[in-house]
Image (tube, rainbow, N blue to C red; front, side, top):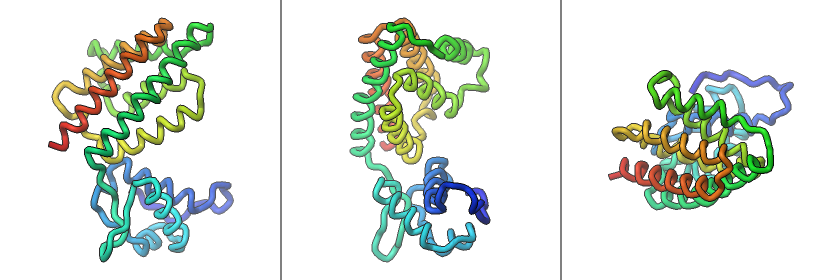
Length: 222
């Protein structure tokens, strides 16, 4: 985690929310790893704040499953089980299937779209013209763009929260041989189906993508 001596007290966001985001992002980025202990005293000294907002942030993170409290160990970063991975991908399959259906419907109803640019960008990467963009942030950008086309902020929020768990605890599947390139191709086909207003095809392709991703994540746990 980057050193953070203090936050601007004039900012509207409460300190406990800043601490929550700080610790959560450190878990998502892999700076705090599964099984690693989080010591309130150390964070208090590092951030130059009292332990109270740290304790509140950790309680919130524990309620969401990012950390857990163990006897004689204290608060540690959680480890996601294969069963939990299956549960998350099962929910994602439903939510993302709905999102692409809504997105394709909006296209059919004449709504504007950022998908033409996205499809062009993915094509460049798939063809090898822009390998620099073949990274995790680009994959996040792709899925963000597609899901936002659904026009449902609440649905987007639910899907994003599930992706936080995946990024935090199961962010290694793209390292499997050939999987990263395959993900790009799957995203490309989904984006094309949405852009063409092919509702059922978009949903079907998304469900196949989620199933393939689930298998890849589970493969890393063998």
